[in-house]
Amino acid sequence: MNTEYKYKTDLHCHTSEASDCASECGADTVEKYIRLGYSSVVITNHFSRNHLNSFGGEYEAFADRFFEAASAARRAAGGRINVLTGMELKAQPHYNEYLIYGVTREMMAGIPDVFTWYIDRVHEYFAEQGCVVIQSHPMRYGITNVEPEFLDGYEILNAHTAWNSHNDVAELWAREVGGEGKILTAGTDHHDPDNIPTAGILTTEPIVSSSQLTETLKSGRFKIFSE
Image (cartoon, rainbow, N blue to C red):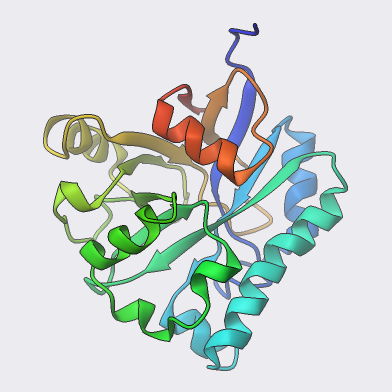
């Protein structure tokens, strides 16, 4: 059995097809990850009311666009890197965002009020379907701390170069206050052509599916890294 933690996965990546704050398309984004030796990348485009309105305002059409964006990146990769679908959901309180791993198109059907949900309902809904709910950049300005029982974990290392995510405070909070046994993650928060992927998790085997990703996160069989 391989025991070397050498397979890199970025857990936080946006593409321009579904995140209007991103300026690099999925095809160009995955080429970058391939060049840098990543085995997997999770496309976690924004799922928020603002992005819904930016792309026409019709919920089901936006959901289709959202999942197609990750599929387009996967097709462009052509099997050279594992491209998984995740989500960065903006729900209540207003500025809070949650990384959802294991999400599918079917889960998002018929719930246009999801942006009004508070974290207790968000966690209940997605946990029932086997997903993992991680609070994004929990110490960034404007983010509200929520009850630990409604989170599976925290993103303690966010490498977005345009924001100060106070990663040192986020790690201290997560380890000392956020609740015992929480999943602690890292990600680049990639958006633009000049963003260089520098963070994520290391595993002993390549992560090839969303079910494998959620099982890995829940088991703790990974290490976070920053380059």
